[in-house]
Picture 1: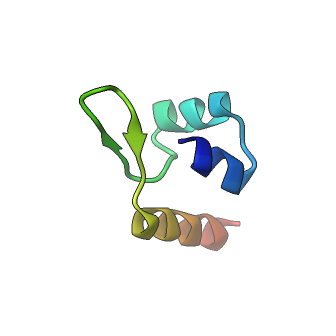
Picture 2: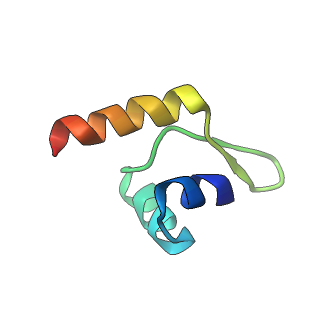
Length: 53
């Protein structure tokens, strides 16, 4: 999650907002509560953001 926020220059609170609104990339929630994003899901998500812009 920290790497995602750093790469896309967004705050953790912005990412949580995107997650709540269903705007974030697909992710997996681990048993310890951490979120994991796959690179392929991030790339698909980012491509869809560019198309909408």
